Image (cartoon, rainbow, N blue to C red):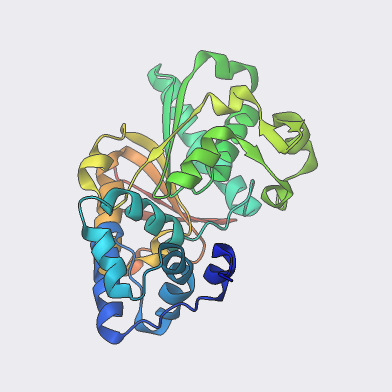
Length: 292
């Protein structure tokens, strides 16, 4: 008797990746996304892509690469690849000390400057937004800071990620308990509504955020993003090599208005990249400012 298909798939072992296959896939991923997978982390390709090979019934990574590059299968397979290789560890109000620093300095300084100029229009870019917790957190902080006066502002939080699945989840705006592990109860009660499947972001918060697929290795796509007053890119560039970091940081520099701010993750810095940004150290973290 034939075994059920699901049982056959579960018993099928993932193929081992050869040296040449690893180099081929590593270079392809780097060319497409800027993410560089070091030799010591080759196991990630086997662990993250192995299941996909089993689903496809593909026996080698060379055959899988052929699907990634064939015109008839390329688009769909690239979507799966991006979802498998990206790390999506995030939560609302993650790293609250850094967020307080953001609110006290870059945000308040931007608001003050814009009020002085009589232009209440604020653009913030959340690069590598994953499933949306960061841009929604930024929107909630904006409400907490501006309060009722937010009605007189034109605010846009542009949020982009490489993964279509993450963008779909962000647009849906419904989250489970894990997303709230770093969230004050008062914020969850104020800006979310309970549903059968979790908690839904309040429509007024969703209204401030625009989600789209954005590849940080795609310069033409980045150039279409409106000039930003503040850019968040936390825990993203750690996956890039120095060349890619330089390109991405230059893209951020070009996108920011004069005097604009860049906020990276605590474990990330751009000191060795020779950028034109000014480094500002405050309690809670550091940020980078584009000279005026």
